[in-house]
Image 1: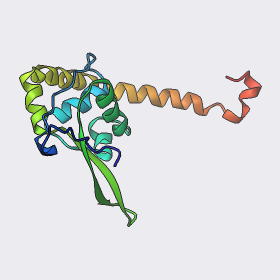
Image 2 (image 1 turned 90 degrees about the vertical axis):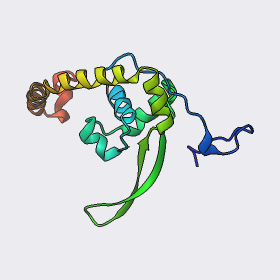
Image 3 (image 1 turned 45 degrees about the vertical axis):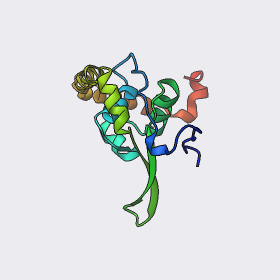
Length: 155
């Protein structure tokens, strides 16, 4: 198991491990910050939930980034889920241990989480404008046939 905990000889049981919170990302207007803020509010995320809650399809990449760059220990497990096309598949769900959350809030996480939520709400106010801009850009791109780029100097 690639994410299995290593056991120190001084520990009698892995469930008694003391988890310390990692550091908070300085930039609060990022998906990384939004994922961590949700985890700190005791939410459990799967990849599909993150599409709708954080607008990303790359939840596992952000979890990895929080673990390696900010030193958060994020728990995970594989769960079975049924699909619309009649299959059963396995997905990962992620969460923070309650001990870690408690220690993070003792260290001032509430103010940080509130900042993340406020800036993300402000960003959502721009969603309509950004979608319109993306549609405009894509309409311009469709006018050019990518197979003819050599005719236009690779543009």
